[in-house]
Amino acid sequence: MKIVILGLNHKTAPVEIREKLAFDTAETSRALYELKKRFGQAEFVLISTCNRVELYCAGKHCQGADTAKLAEFFSEFHNIELDKFRQFLYAYEDEDAIRHLLTVSSSLDSLVVGEAQIIGQVKESYRLACAAKTTGKILNRLFHCAFATSKKVYTTTSISNGRVSVAGVAVELAMQLFADISSAKVVVIGAGDTGRLIVQHLLQAGARNITVVNRSYDRGLKAAQKYGIRAEKWEQLNEQLIDANIAIASASVQDYLFRKDSFKKIIANRKEGTLLIIDIAVPRNFEPAVNELEGIYLYSVDDLAAVVEQNRKTRQQDVAKGMEIILENVTDFTEWFGSKDIGPLIGRMKKQFKQIGENEIERFFVEGKQDASGREVMEAMVNRVVNKLLYCVIKNVNIVARENGATEAAKMVDSIVRQAEEIMSEPGGKEDAKQ
Image: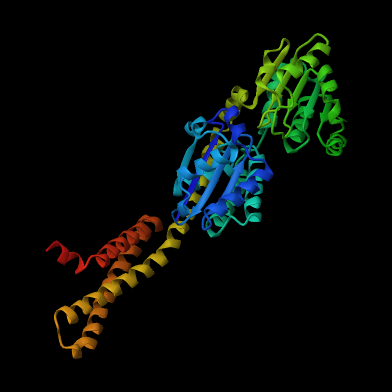
């Protein structure tokens, strides 16, 4: 059995690549159904956030769903040539894959260490996979292990204290670039989870003139009423940007809301003064070329590096403690993962040993033309020998499992099984073949 991850994230791929490979909710479900059709016996979970796209696969040798085929699937699904993103991909297997998911779900692999949104995103990805019926015994157990690990990291460390989200870092950047945020007119584009977090951080930072603009006005109005700010209809977005000092965007869209040419009309109607735009959406809301316009300063999620690094340095001790928790849980899961294969392997080994004994008895009586009257006695003797040899082998397997872990024990039994298969496939047996 194998566990494989193929993906890319903010560390390996720029936002212009991540946004092309991102999956929205409907696409995630459709991709899972397609994967199940292609690789019917394998298990799948697909995680897609603003900072990562990762496909988790488990099964017996992943049922042919190796990393090359999974990369081809990404290419076909998004209609993007593989050579355009192949270099940004990473792949993990088995223990490395287990450790990676636990690190991701505990936010230690996030752009902003300690952010709480990732565990919600991982849970939602798992829920979609369950709904698509693409999970099974392995990934079910692995993801529940990830949820428990995340909870322990958050409850036993102070990693989530302070401004620990991409939304919070975006506001931190706005505070660094805009001298007096309390006097600024701020437009928040999008009223989803991230948009609401942006509003919370803006209020904590002292902003008082905040307007939220959302595609669904009712949802935007609900958020506005909760936080005591204003909401405007989507059709008023351009008007709001004409008077804004700061815009922070996190709307979920598949194409740019604003391109350079269309944004020129907004610029033409603006009074003097600069407009700071922080676009943390993936796919992005603003075309990068908007930054070329006079008086516009556009930052994407990848431009938050300096603030993110400061955040990481203040949490080094918490990261170390969190990794200790993760490694303990990786060991526990790896033991289970390894041991689940030992039972069936030992069953196969017993069957093969017995078959080898039967084959030798058959050779003895057929080739040697021995008296068949002694066959029953010979079979009983050979069975006793086979059982004693099996006892010795299984005893040593248990020693290896106790001293080196179930995974190593499973590898040992698998090696014996393969050798037994070779002996059974050789006419006359291995020793005769050498002669």
